[in-house]
Length: 141
Image 1 (cartoon, rainbow, N blue to C red):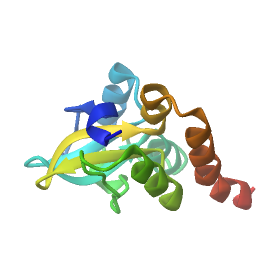
Image 2: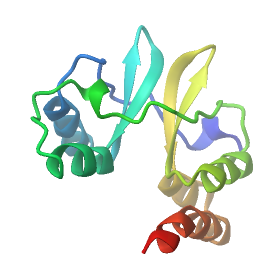
Image 3: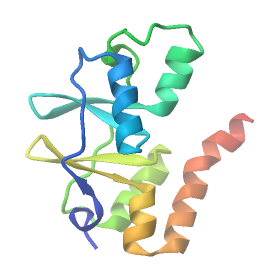
């Protein structure tokens, strides 16, 4: 199965100069934990609910600050033609739960571990992927 078949197309995004609060409100409205930071259709970063907790709330940063100042810059992306197996392996390798989907350098969707689990219905692969993603967390505890 291809990423194109399971991704959420045309996800909501923020621009680099939008506020952190704007990103948080999009997360709330869309019931998501990640929002791509995009300029002219190209992914610059991703801001996650964890970024907001660790880099804003814990550090006392104003929610009116620029989202790009706290977003994760090193973004790992998938292509729509990538297999779901390849995406699972990429998530495991980089210990991430979401991948922006990019085609011709433009954001076309986003895929999460949940999308792979629900739409692909491969519980064991999703479980294996989640276990590998969580390994880094277990080591830090």
